[in-house]
Amino acid sequence: MPASWPHLFPLRTAPDRFVQNPLIQRLLRNSGYILSANTASAALSFVQTLMAARLLGVAGYGTLGIITVFASNINRLTSFRMGELVIRYVGKYSTEGDPRRAMAVFKAAGLTEMLSSVLAYALVVLLSPWAARTLAKDPSVAGMFSLYGLVLLANLMAESSTALLQYLNRFRLIAAFTVGQSLLTLLLIAGAFSAHGGLQAIVLAYLIGKAAWAVAITLAAFVEARRHWEGRWWITPLATLRGDARELAKFALSTNASATINLVTRDSDILWLSWLSTPIEVGYYKAARTFINVIFVPIDPLISTTYRELAREAAARQWANVRHLLRTGSLIASTWAVPACLGLTVLGSWFLSWYGPEFGAAYPAMVLLLAGVLVANVFYWSRILLHALGHATYPMRTYLIVGLLQILGILLLVPRLGAPGMAMMWSAYSVVSALILVRKGLQEVRHGAAPEAAPAT
Image (cartoon, rainbow, N blue to C red; front, side):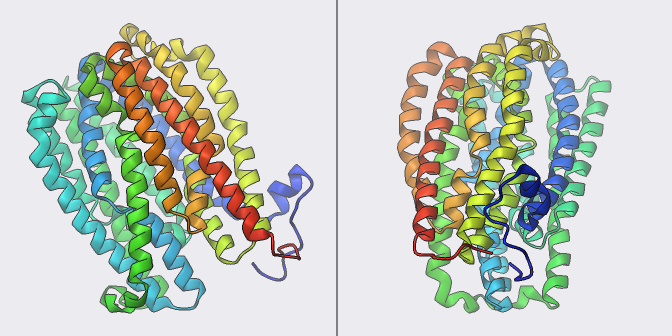
């Protein structure tokens, strides 16, 4: 942090917190770019889902959700969350004045992501008949799983590329690509809706839109990397990282393990529900999740921008700044999440009727999801704080223990309750794991700040 900045911590008033603090100004500016894009994208996506749901009906809409979630979860299963590794270690080596190692990290992350994407697509093709028979309850849609899986090949380096653009402060560019993808997908789905197309037309629309975004984001990252490092970063030898290989591998494996546990538990809710229930229940649950996901729209940008700032401030041991980021982030999240959750509780049935009268049965699942959504939004930084502090294994252990309990609850409740049972267990997992991580993260921040006699500037 530049020495010319005034002593801003701790801040006493709300205007100071939001106006005078350069750290928060940067956080809000970058979040604003992504928020604007996500808001526009959410509006476009909402129209997409309305047309898809009305065109396909409850069961068909549920099948669409199974197809898209299956491919994305297989991809996350093989992924090592290269985005977090890129932000942390490109930032670390750049701060240390070692651009060669920073370039090598991006190259290694990209190559690893390429291999995992190819593996993911192979698994999707291999498991498509099983997924169609067991999850979608319709063997005839096996080809749809393989078709949509092609998006994984387009995403060869999308995660690493997005992370590099975030580190290089190109949030406006990311925002433009996000809106462009949603607009393209909407146009394609509108065409399918006008032509009275079926499931294949909708799957193709989502595939083309997501593939276009992935290719654009990857090409942009290549251009920005060459501009930033003023050279051919791709020829940097991976041997440059030989002394850091163990640390990098441990970080990648830990974040992958955490993601895998979340994948099997919280983020595979639609797949668990499809296995233990019917596509109709999946359709209800997916409709409820669509409205719930709207609450995350303003919060998602804070995750990536806050992680970038937390990693920088923690590396510089600016603990007062870290605490300030956490307090301000939760305050920002609360001002949106609390009224949004109350609004959906009151007006949820009316919103669901937009999909069609048969979707009103999704309201109980929506209300049960709101408890987990509120806690997850207010403490959106619970996991990324520990990653920024170098404790990537703690979230993994927490997710494992809480996840095993959640799976037990899913097996007991979902066959009897359907979508509401899945919503209940999703919220329980979100609340318990978030609170455990918050407690641990704050303990680590206090421990790091304890020996310091002078406040950060």
